[in-house]
Each structure stands twice: as C-alpha cells, then as structure tokens.
Image (cartoon, rainbow, N blue to C red; front, side):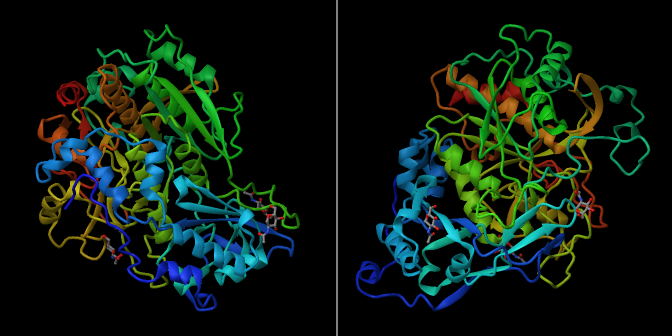
Length: 602
Ligand SMILES: *[C@@H]1O[C@H](CO)[C@@H](O)[C@H](O)[C@H]1NC(C)=O
Ligand SMILES: *[C@@H]1O[C@H](CO)[C@@H](O)[C@H](O)[C@H]1NC(C)=O
Ligand SMILES: *[C@@H]1O[C@H](CO)[C@@H](O)[C@H](O)[C@H]1NC(C)=O
C-alpha cells in the first residue's frame, strides 16, 4: 500500500551491515557475474585489448537505502485523485526539489563505505571517487583498464562497429564481489554496447521508388494528400486558440545526439510558412551542449529540424532548449594508444547526470532516440529508467518516440544465443516512467504501420496500466503467444500524426518526412501548453503523465481512441489498433480542448 511518506527502512540489510564495514573484510575475491552476453553483440567486433596505459571512468549505481521510496513518491505526486489510495491525493503535484530527490535515492551511509573499501583494496584512493545523480552514483575517474579488469572480473577490449567503425571500450561480461550484489545496481560502461542512434527510419524522406514504405496515398480520399503541417495539427488536436501565458516559466526541452542540430534560419523559414502569427517574439531556441556536444548552425540535420520545427509549430512562444549531447565515439577520433580516459560513450547517462544536477529543468522534454530493449543490459536499463523516474518526481513530463519498426525489425531474433524469434520492444519507451508516443496518419486517424509497440521483457505491468492492458490481451487471445511478454509494461502510451511532415532543411522545403520522432515533439508541444496553462494559473506542471493519462484524462474523454490499423513486423501482421488501449497507438491521440478543461479542474 502507498501512504504519504511510508518509508521502507533498511529492509535490504537487516543484519550487521555497519559491522561489516568496520571489522570484517568481505571476501573481495568471491566474485559473481553481474551481467554477461551470450556472445559479442551483433555488429560489433573485437579489436583486441587497449594499450597498457589506457584508462577508463567507471560509474557505479548504488542501491538506495529506501528501496521503493522513489517510485512510491513518483506515483503519489503524479496520481490525481487516485481512487484506491485516497491518501495519494494529498500529494498530487507536490514535486520535489533536487535536494529532496537526492535524499530519496540516497544509499545507506554504509553502502558507500563498503564500496569504497572495495575500491581501496584494489588501490583506488577515495580522492578518485565522487558522487553524482543525487548521491546514488559513484564516479571513479582515471581507472587503469587493467585495474578495471581486476575490479570487475572483466576483459575490457576495443570493439568496432562493423557498420560505422565507431570504436568503444567494453567487456562482454562483468562480475562483482558477492558482498556487493545487494548494494550495487549497475556499473557502466561495461556490457552496454548500444548507442542511442536515431530510431531507424525516423525523419526519413520517403523515396518514391520504394513501395514497401508506408503510404498515406494508398487511400482513395483526396483530402489525405494534404501535407501534415502545424496548422493541420493545430486544428486536428484543437490547440489553435490557446496562447501560452506563463512565458517566464514554461520551457520545452529537446534532446539530440550524434551531433545533429536544428537550424535557426530553417526554423524562421518554417515558422514564416506555417505559423505566420509567430512574430512577437520571433521563434528561436537556446542550445546547451552536454558532455562536449557541439553546435554548428551551418549544418542542420533532418531529425533535429523535425523535432524543433514541430515542437515550435505547436508550442510557440514557449521557450525551447535544444540539448546537444556529445560523446558518441567517432570512427577516427579514438586513439587506442593515448592515455585519455575513455568515458565518453554512455550518452544517456551523461545527459541524465547533467539534467538531474540542474535546479531548474524544462517541464517537458522530448527524445526521439532509442534502441532494441534487448541490447540494453537489464541492470543498466533499470538504472537509467530510475533516473527518468527522478525527472518525473521533479515535475518533468518525459516523452519518447516509440520507434519506427512495428513490432520489430530485422530478423527479430532473441540475442541470448537461442535464436528464438520474438517481437522486439524498444527502450527507453518501455521504461514505465516515461510516456511513449506512437504514430497515426490521416483523418479520421488510423494507426501508422511503422508505429512501434508491444511489451517489455524488463519492466512489469505498471499500476496505471492494470485496467487498460488486460482487455487488449483478452481480445488478442492466443495469437502471438510466445512472441511477446503478456505480464509486462505495454507501450506506447499515446500517439500523434507521424507521416507526411513538411520540414525546412538547409533553406529547402522537404516533404514526405515520417516517423514517431515527429509524433513525439507534437505531443511534447501539446503537453507543454497544458503545463503552461497550469503554471499560468499558479498550479504545478503536469509532471509524470501516465497515471493522469490512464486515469482522469481517459475517463473524462480527453483522448481520441484510434481503432484501426496495425503495426506489422517480424513476418507477422503485428498488433491491431482496437477500442481502448493497444500496443500500436496506446490510448489514442490528445484532444487539447478537452484536456484543458480537465487540467483546469484539479
Ligand atoms: C586517480 O586519479 C588520477 C587522476 O585522474 C589518475 O591518474 C589515477 O590513475 C587514478 N588512480 C586510480 C587507481 O584510479
Ligand atoms: C570503416 O573502415 C574500413 C576500413 O578501414 C573502410 O573501408 C570503411 O569505408 C569504413 N567505413 C566507414 C563507414 O567509415
Ligand atoms: C517477462 O517480463 C517480466 C517483467 O514483466 C520479466 O521478469 C520476465 O523475465 C520476462 N520474460 C521473458 C521470457 O523475457
């Protein structure tokens, strides 16, 4: 049961934890595997061990003292008038400060001591250890790779991506002393080989020569030939009459990786074409580089332009920040013989560390990058997901594109060495503490066939989905049994138009752009205006959306159910959009006018 400030004290360590730190020396040599892959992940090949002097920075995620406090608090502050837990209502919207979240996730004081004594045993001085992510993470700098191998029973090697030549330092297996398994959630970088590459096919221009791509023009209705532009969307989702009012507070954040940037001149041109009313103030954005992320105004990119132009097209004049997150290894910049710490390739962690350390965070943040869930080690995915929960507790609506591969792309093979075929869910959209967004097309809206959706293999059914998901599974029956995990979080949560976008790129108009990475910024724009309304009327922003979406917003008809279309993949027809929630369009698309009435009432 949830109660205000119910604390689960030290259930982890009923025993002599402090005694352990003081007197006993745990048997550090007693190691147990923490995570390993069955084989080197697909598309990577070993280039051998790095040179002797190579160093690495390690991130160690510590278990919090109060194991459930973060997630309990997240639901308490995010669930309006939760009927089964009346006490929750007292905390809706009471988001926490950076310091309060740090308290919530703080490890037991002895946890850090024990981990440090293990590091010292291996000759790593406390001066090389600092805390981050609200005290829940230790960063150990300048660890010689040979020492990292000893610490983690690992074999760090240089791995090259066979497609892009990107080279990273990783290990296929790592272990921890048995005494630390209950105290440490994950260590990075270790076995996570994935890079948050742009979801495949996002912000692509449809090539006329290829018929396999989704086509709105399959329909006979001529009206459907219209390009999807801000005016089309503002009329469809009924935002056209709202003018954001809390301009000193409202901020919408967009993340970008891969050195992909939006163009300022392109935005101006796009807004002149599609939001001619957007003149005072002029549409603009701020760029913040994170982890060495750059900005070249002369070199705008499809993905970043799509995200920025459609977020602004919806939400102007709300302030926009673009986070340019660096750290992806270049194919040619890594110098194996240099002694530089090679810590620069966990971009999600780098960005989360940065944002969680800010006192002020945008109320809405949208991201159009992710990858197959199975390429993220479970312990790593859980740790990253909990960092998104921290953002939710702070009052941030975290939005992700669900992916563009239907129920799965490629051969849909499980990567555990068994060769089993299954649908492949996408992470971070499967994290229960983010809102994931699929795609629709046309009017009346139907599911877009590339809209990724399905069920996690890592995260169980969250409480807000206990009424929404079972009816879908019941209707599905035994079709696809074994291809998906029926006990898990279903995704996406909601959807928005995802095909026939028109963008400006390098001063030229491009049309027929499609992808869930266009749907996510549209939703972010709508949500940021709802939060803007709340801020303008002295209320907290919406924060973590899902308990509200699956509860009040749905019950009070703020969501348009999408009931046709499907998301084929893995040589199947995929799932179908049906009455109620489905793993193609989620609950459906947002009706801003109706939602405005709902957020005005509580
Ligand atoms: C401690 O940090 C220094 C400076 O970054 C580095 O040179 C050294 O290798 C580190 N020592 C260990 C054992 O990690
Ligand atoms: C990767 O390296 C190989 C061999 O050096 C080269 O032939 C290939 O063009 C490179 N690929 C990319 C994408 O840079
Ligand atoms: C199914 O999902 C649950 C979490 O909801 C997980 O514990 C379990 O391992 C998953 N099963 C498979 C076969 O992946």
